[in-house]
Amino acid sequence: MNKDSTINQDIFLHNRKELSISSVKKINSLNDLLFDIETGYGRIKIEGKELDMVSLDNDKEILILKGVIDKIEYLEKTKNKKDSSFIAKIFK
Image (cartoon, rainbow, N blue to C red; front, side, top):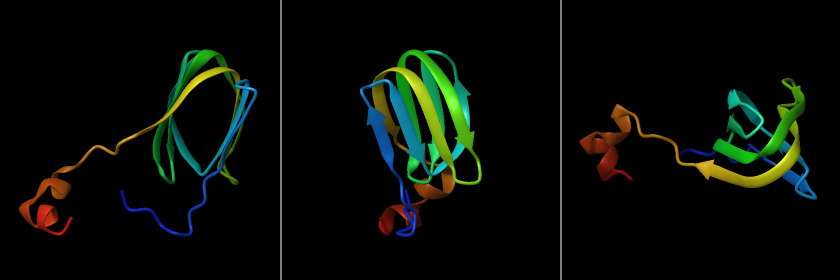
C-alpha cells in the first residue's frame, strides 16, 4: 500500500470502551459486533460487543465508537490485477 507521508492517523482507545480513529474515509459495514472501515492507512476491522457509533465527522475524518472493544486489526489491501502484472512484481 502506498502511504502518503502527509497522512496522519491517530487511534485512541480509552479503557477498552471508547475508540477514536482519525483519517476515516469510509465505513464498509457496521453492527454491534463488528465495524469495517477504510482509512488513509488501509482497512481496519474493529471487533467487540455492544459497539455503537457515537459520531462520524466527515470533514475531520474522525470516527468515535463506544462499546467493549476486543480487537483492532489492520487488514492487508487486496491486490488488483495491475498489482499482479509481471512488471509490477519486478519493481516491488
